[in-house]
Length: 421
Image 1 (cartoon, rainbow, N blue to C red):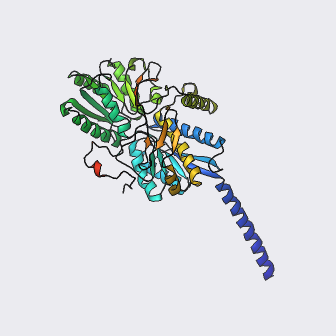
Image 2: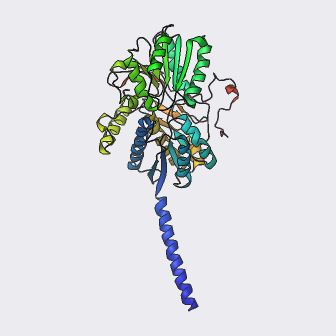
């Protein structure tokens, strides 16, 4: 009896073990990747398209054979424009969903929210949006622009004869870390060019702000003091009422140009752009750039939108953070192939020096030390069809300066990633 019971127990445990092994094998057949973007709330206008672009890129990689012979499995979460929820969802992706990498965040406050989680758990985040710099984490790869790849060149252009020779600057932003730090850098840069504080106005509004009547009236009043440009770091759906108010009050680009750092083709989809023709945006990519890689990128995106019944599929556009998302996912896949692993430490090492022929028309390189892409800088002028005409661009990609030279003490900071805490 005892022998028979033991035999049964052994057979049962062997069966359970075999089932467990099967489940483990099944689980290991895919590589889970996290997508951490706001699909609701004030930032959904900008971030939803990044989620969809990530899914399209994952599809593209899977059709080409996946990564190290395995298919990528996206895990999508919605932190709902709620900054503490970004940290919670980031932790969930790393600890419960066991993702190999996360692609996500838009605002710097959302990135700052998740950063301690990724550093604590040694996760890997690819961040696809221009930002204020002043950070270089070993757990983040920054595929958007640092200030010297967007903000500084844009202001230099505004001060040039071609850009209107601006002498006074109205800095308008959403009230959080990215606009405030960017404007701190820009104020120091303007001082270095001889611009006095009396010729710089700085105004902030909360996320989701919609009444720009008084602010636009104040811009007009400030502009009466001489050649003026507006530098906008307004984020999310507040851009729609801001631009509508510019049109309502007849403030034209020939009179007071606005250069935006967070307005691209996606944000302009909801606006009649005819009154805004001539206003500017500074990015590292525009949908309108002409080259074979971009033609395919735009065509693939439009086809994907129709095939997946995305909202307003007939009018979808590409933009800079979408291109940065696309490049980042492909670079991560290349690094994982090079490392023959999705282990964070091995992928981090393999990311150094990765290159990718981007839709911008440039071959982009991940810097060997600072976790930032070398990127071209482009300034585009709004057209009446909601697209941008590139009026100025650099000849070559520019190396990022995460630590701005216009902030005292930055020259003593290391040119390699260090944990933030």
